[in-house]
Every structure is written in structure tokens, then in C-alpha cells.
Image (cartoon, rainbow, N blue to C red):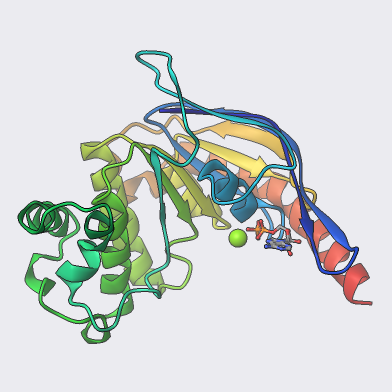
Length: 267
Ligand SMILES: Nc1ncnc2c1ncn2[C@@H]1O[C@H](COP(=O)(O)OP(=O)(O)O)[C@@H](O)[C@H]1O
Ligand SMILES: [Mg+2]
């Protein structure tokens, strides 16, 4: 599915009469089957943008089109996407497999069918051995896998990920990034992945959409032409270093601006 964002704006009501312009008009085409990383300083509207794409919030302006690239038909916003939440909202009273099978259960999928599907995604996410465990028996990294499995089981062509690995320790994060690369290789989806880590954006993405401080705009789109399948070895290549320097230069200006904004607001 192509995700075509045209002149999209979002103004939040911040309580009382206060309004926060979170997104200035933003336009971008997220191409079907490609992995886009949204990179920008805290508060620049990254979460706002992917929530809008997922149909979880209403637009203040502009349009979002979800288009089937083969038939060209326009699809309802939200119907073909799934958000991967951080693994913190798993049901503690359900086993891993019952957590993963929850979405299909809500859609009325039969018991046999949803367990069969759940076993498939447990295999893909390396959780086979943990099917009967409860979330409290899992490490943080394993819980993130369950959260990913919960999203994948829905079989939607658009995957929305909002800083999914931000809370993981550095080693676990790397393992999850490599897993995600492998999963993306096996099933190309249209992925919108929010991060504030430049190295993560380069390692994973086909492009990096760099956003400016609030109200969020697209400052630059950096294509990442590192070949796939990718491994961690790409971080040692000169191209990775070049992309890092370029993104860092763009981001540094915006982070400085965002920090100045926050200080002015709290003064
Ligand atoms: N539900 C909301 N109600 C009011 N303001 C919000 C809401 N969500 C986000 N904001 C504000 O919109 C701006 C952008 O937020 P967000 O999209 O979460 O940024 P990011 O994900 O890039 O850190 C921030 O100033 C934030 O406080
Ligand atoms: Mg956010």
C-alpha cells in the first residue's frame, strides 16, 4: 500500500483555549513496500504523524490517501495498517500465545485458525518456546517480540512503529533491529518507523524523513541506498558514515531549536 500524505496539519487542543500546532503542512509519499524512518527531535510531531496515518486521530488539514499500488484503488485510512505498541501493554493474565491471538479473537476468527496463525508469527519472531509463558516471565526484549508478533498477526500491509525499541538496553536493541531487518526482508511491508536514533534510522530504513522542530515539517528526505539484506556490518561502511554525518548535521540544528523552544516555554 502507498501512503500519500498531502498538506497534512495537526493542531492539538492543549487544554483551555491553548492550541499546539504539532504538524505544519507535511507532504510525503511513503512508497509501498519501503521502510521509512521518521527522525526528529522530541516533540516535533513524529508520533502525531504516524497516529494520523493509522487513522487514530483526526486531521486538522490536508489529506491522507492509502492506495493499492496494483489496482490503484483508494482504501480507507486505518483499515490496512497496524500499530506496534511498546511491549508494556500486554495482558498479564494471558499467556504469550493468547496475547498474540488477541487481535484475531476480537475480529471473530475461529479458535483453531487464530492459534494456527499465532504459532506462525511466534515462529517468525523467535517465540516458539515461550508460547505458554506469561509476560512477567519474559525479559524486556522478549516482551517487545510479543508486541511485534501481536502486530504481525494482523497481516496488514502497513506497519506503524513508534520508537518500539527505545526502552531496550543497547545489546537487546541491536538484536531486535537485526530481527526486524530479517522480518522485513521476508515480508516487505510499508513501514513507518519513528526513531530519534540516527544509526537505527540508517541501519533499518530505505529513506530517512528528517523532521524539523515544532511545528513539525519535513526538512529533508535522505535516501538510504545500502543494499539489502543488511547486517550490522553496514555500520562499518564509508556510506554509513557519510549518511550519519549528513543526518547528524541536519538533526543537530533541529534539536538545538527544540531545546530552545522548550526552555522558552518553561520559563
Ligand atoms: N493528545 C495530545 N493532546 C495535546 N497535545 C499533544 C497530544 N499529543 C501530542 N501533543 C503535542 O504535540 C506536539 C508533538 O507531539 P508528538 O507527536 O508526540 O511528538 P514526537 O513524537 O515527535 O516527540 C508536542 O508539543 C506534544 O505535546
Ligand atoms: Mg513520540
